[in-house]
Amino acid sequence: MPTKKLPTREQVPPELTWDLTTIYPSDADWEIAFKEIKAAGQAAAQLKTTLGASADNLSHGLDQVFDLYRQLEKLYVYASLKHNQDNDNATYQGMDQRAGALAAQISAQVSFVEPEILALPAAQLKDYIAANTTLQGYQHYLDQVTATRAHVLSAEAEELLAGASDVFDASAATFDVLNDVDLPFPTVKDTMGNDVELSQGVYGTLIESTDRAVRQQAFRQLYKVYGQFRNTLASTLSAHVKMHNYRARVHHYTSARQAALAANNIPESVYDTLVAEVEKNLPLLHRYVALRKRILGVKELHMYDMYTPLTGEPSLTYTYDQAKAEVLQATKVLGRDYTDIVKEAFATRWVDVVENKGKTSGAYSSGMYDTNPYILLNWQNNLNNLYTLVHEMGHSVHSYYTHHNQPYVYGDYAIFVAEIASTTNENLLTDYLLKQQTDPRTRAYILNYYLDGFKGTIFRQTQFAEFEHFIHTEDAKGVPLTAEHLSAYYGELNQKYYGPAVINDSEIALEWSRIPHFYFNYYVYQYATGFAAATTLANNIVNGTAAERTAYINYLKSGSSAYPIEIMQKAGVDMTQPTYLQQAFKVFAQRLTELETLLADLG
Image 1: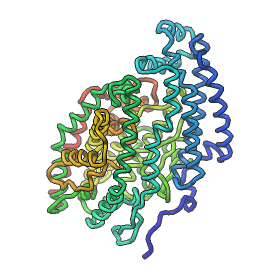
Image 2: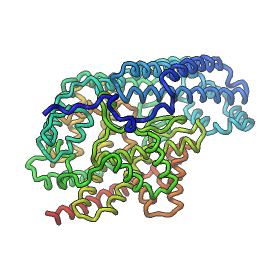
Image 3: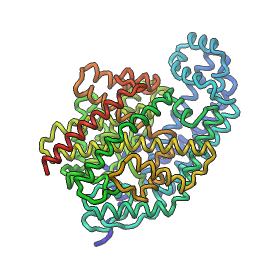
Image 4: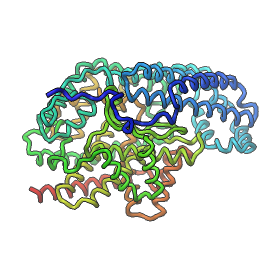
């Protein structure tokens, strides 16, 4: 039987692809915009040394610079999405690189803005704001800028750093190309015995197979590839960590973590509280892992056994069309206005659905203020992909609400609150499915899926957060981040998290080498805090008052008009306290108990 090959981009039906002509009708229009934006960047550079002269100068200057960024983001999003849909396409590789280089150039050209704002005495800036209604609209932005007064360098120094942004990001770009295009994945057998080309998406399906030989083969073959490139991957990750530490150091932060969290006024205690509460509740994860070993009936539980359903073959599968209908039903509780936005997403091709050769792996929501909030998927007909769709739709509807209710300057939102919107949707889907399904085996499957999701989002992402903090701390101490050092620590960390019931396979020590999020900047902890906060919010939406549902929609509309902690407090969750985490673990314990009971009754 011939090997099943991924389709090329040209072979994918148009209705299963995103429509990027709403951004630019053609690549030629993108090229025209590129020239115009380049000229606008040169014009904005002429504002240097003028912003502080008067309130009008400052307000007009900010308008001009933010309009430039608005045009630049549109240019960048188009090139990025085109590149991601087929990383092998040289034309779009080039456009993406050119957009990145232009972004670095413009960033350098307007890097004087914050230093000139900070050069204004506080009293004078206050007078400017009082006298100018346009500046009053920038109040929160100006508060954010002045809050970083101790960490902003001279205009010349900021220009040098901004101009090197594409250089600073080079190691992450190298990882992306290696991970998505150049790694030589082998052919493996699927559950039906067919030869399939291993890929990130295919691996995600095979690791859930009920055939243990399929899981083991996929696991070992995947990590065999990463193992062959472990030194290269350690080098790219080490360079990226050094960049984070360098930028934090020159901006007078005590650590890369402090610098990353300060951007959104997140106390470092939020990070430490997360790790502490998760470690306190690791016995719950160990209990779940022990249940998995018992139900699977294996003498030894391996890491490749951690994703197969405990209830046998999945009782729920979904085509993409069926999944769209389920997303609408699950989010109906949020009101008609919300579901109308979801319908628009499906009707006007916001979603790029299926995996094709060269396409970026995984899933995400993208876009900017003047575009649709697009979604990239690599669709497989399973429950996991239904959850992925409802998750990414949470991001995209959040973006839609923000773009339609905030001015451009506040028309985005911090990652810290972004993951709350997406994981609230996941919690709503779980609640909906449990209400719809009465069959014990189906309920057990959904509960198992929920517990796996909790494990993957709160426990696993906190494990990643611990690792991320470790590598930044080690580099700051001057310890080389070799493949051996990274693997040794990661293996020990994995053993601590999953406990004595599972064999700590040697391959899993290499997991750090394939995680794209380690190339972001203290990002992963927000998945865990977001999922925990979403537990409280989903409960408020399903079981609370109309006022609580309105508070949630208002959060989606808030963008970055206030600090993330303040926005979430208004939505009903105080993330400076451990209570929201404790509530999440309570739900995990309750659903674990129900699953244990169901599986015992089912024999």
